[in-house]
Image (tube, rainbow, N blue to C red):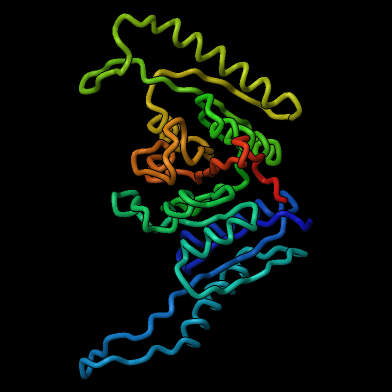
Amino acid sequence: MGNKVVLVGVDGSNESLKAATWGARFAERAGWDLKVLCAYALPSFTASSLDGGYAALDDEAIKNSALAVVNEAVQQISAPGMHVETVLEAGDPAGILVEYSKKVDLIVVGTRGGGGFADRLLGTVSSALPAHAHCPVVVVPRTKKDVTFVPPKRIVVGVDGSNTSTRSLSVAISVAEMWDAELTVFSAVPLATTTGAMSWFPSSVDRDAVMNDVRERLNELVAEAVKDHQVRVRKHALDGNPASLLTEFSSAVELVVVGSRGRGGFTGLLLGSTSQAVLGHAYCPVLVVPSKHSQSGDVIPVWDRN
C-alpha cells in the first residue's frame, strides 16, 4: 500500500487556489502525497458570431489552458522537497472527482458561489462532490480576506449519536491531533420555543432532563473517542438548531467537520440537510465525512483503504 493521497481540484479561480494551498499544507503536515487535478470540458462545437454556423473548438488549446491552470496552482503551493503530481482529465468535473474519491483519501475543492440558492444546487462541484464522494471532502469557501485557514488552530464538530457523526468525530480528532488544534465537540437539540419558531418538543417534556441526558451521552462518546489520542477537547450540550450553530461556530474557527448525512438516512446530500446548509453558509472550510458501510452494515473506518 502506498502513501495516502490528497487530491486538489482546481479551475483557475481564486477559491480553487486557496483550496490548493489548504490541501498542500495538509499533505505536507500529514506526510501524504499530493495531486493537483484540473478537469476540463471538450464541447464538440461552438456558435460562430460571424455567419451563424458552427466552428470546431481546438481541443489541444483547451487542454493547454487546463495545464496552465494546474501549473499556476503548483507554482503557488510548492515547497522545498515537495513532490506534486499533476493530472488533467477531460469530462465533467464533479463526476471525475467522485470517481477519484474511490482511490484517494482526501479531496479539497473551492466553492465558486456566494452562498445563495444557486450555489447550493446539487449540480455544482462543491455540493455534488460531498454528496457522493467515497472519501472525506474539504470545501474552502469564498472569502474577501486574504486568508488560507491553515494551520487550523480551532476545529468544531457536531455529533448526534449516529454512526455518521461518530465517523465525523473520529476524523475531527485525527485532524486536531495532527495540527495540535483545540477541538470543540457539541450536541444540539432544538428545545426552545422562540418567536416565529415552534419547538418539536411538547411542553410536558422536562427540558433540563433532556439536556442532562444529551450532556451525559456526549461525555461518554467523547471519552471513548479520545482515549488513545492526545488532543485538547471542549464539550458543549446546546439548545438550538445544529446547522445554525455550526454556521455560527464557523465564524470563530478555522475548520468545521460534518457528516454527509445524519439519522435521516437519505442516499445523497439533500438541500435541507445539516451538512448542505453548513456548506452553503460557512465562513471557514468545511470537512464533510461520508457515511460508508460494509456489506455487513458495519461502519468502514475513514481513511482505511484495502
